[in-house]
Image 1 (cartoon, rainbow, N blue to C red):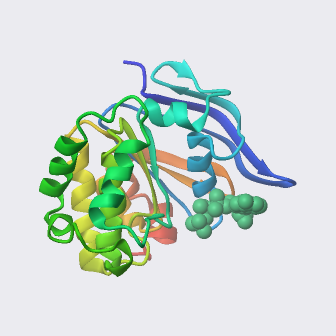
Image 2: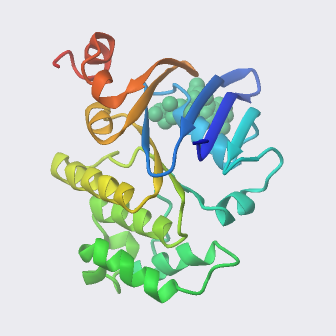
Amino acid sequence: MSALLEVDDLRISYGKVEAVRGVSLRVHDGEIISIIGPNGAGKTSLLAGLMGLVPATGSIRYQGRDLAGSEIEDRVENGLCLVPERRELFGDLTVAENLRLGSYVRRTDISGTRQRLDGVYARFPRLAERRTQRASTLSGGERQMLALGRALMAKPRLLMLDEPSLGLAPLIVRDIFHIIKALKETGVAILLVEQNARAALQTADSAHVIETGGVTLSGKAADLLHDPRVVATYLGGAA
Ligand code: ATP
């Protein structure tokens, strides 16, 4: 079966800084692939390149189609969706308004907004309770839920999550990763960039370690959890 996303030799530079140096990876339908690695390794840049937010060279094939020259809007239209690290909610708008905006990023598929909204509220009861509350008044965990819910309103086929656990308390991190696993059950493919290597590896099917812009280690997530190099560098030395 050909992969949903096929990335080959992806390179991204900012002037003289080469942030991504020849990354290749595959994501299949309904699969969670994690990218772990230290600060500044190029993880965010990789997602930005896949989304079309920064120029990249190399090959990105999505649904069998070459994305070279494809606009961000086209990528969104075809079910590529990024939840950025900063979550980028509209603080003055309510939970419900933020969610509805998720639907409107897709030009051709606004019908079904109501139904998708109900789906998001069923998945995130906390958002349903707070639907009239301004996003700026939500807790960190609720904001992350809102960012995920808003992404789901765009009916993603491949969801890219940048550090969904950032700044959240451990119990909330656990909730967020449960939600990510549950999303996989709906058939969405997920490319998950995470600094919390343990949670990422416990959630993913496969994973790649990225260091200074290149993949240094790849494998089944369950195996990487016991790989001595991963244990020593990313899991605090305790298997
Ligand atoms: P973090 O986890 O800290 O976000 P990261 O693995 O996501 O790190 P990137 O944010 O992709 O890494 O950064 C990779 C490299 O590219 C870093 O050296 C960073 O300073 C540089 N970089 C990122 N964005 C830009 C930019 N807009 N202009 C110049 N350099 C950039």
